[in-house]
Image 1: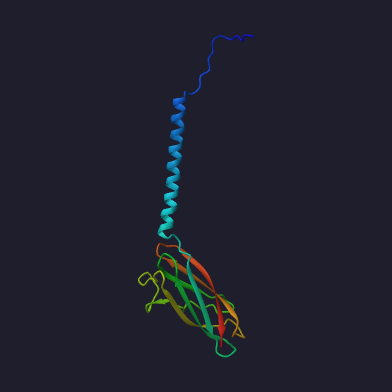
Image 2 (image 1 turned 90 degrees about the vertical axis):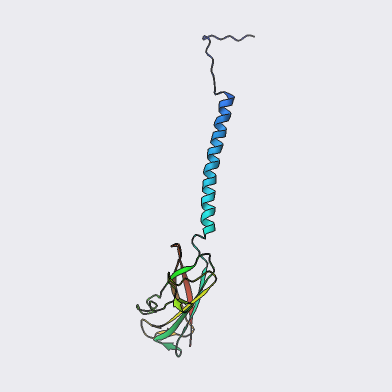
Length: 170
């Protein structure tokens, strides 16, 4: 059996093997460059520390008697992250705290307030205490846990919010 061409001499031509190989190499190189740029950017940010989410805190509140409209709130923070802390703000929910509470609580390190001029270094402990008042009667009750929100700002601008459960004691 013989096959014949019936429609003239049309030859179909594809891309030569050399051009195809060069195109595949070029595509692989471009993909490698893009992947390299992505990975080095990610690793670079990781090594700089990025947002440091390793500040831990605890606290307690001393209440005179078993119930009282006032108490002494004491909090501590430990910077276990990779960046120094340059600011701390404490917020106490109302109720049970009165609206003006906790703004008076200032965290200190080395005897001075934690601020851009007095950073809380990595591995260091900061502490603060302030008198607080209850929003309404019967006030604070010894043995009750209260929640306090602490916003920490790091050198470089990242921040962390932690909730500290404060146990009240008489």
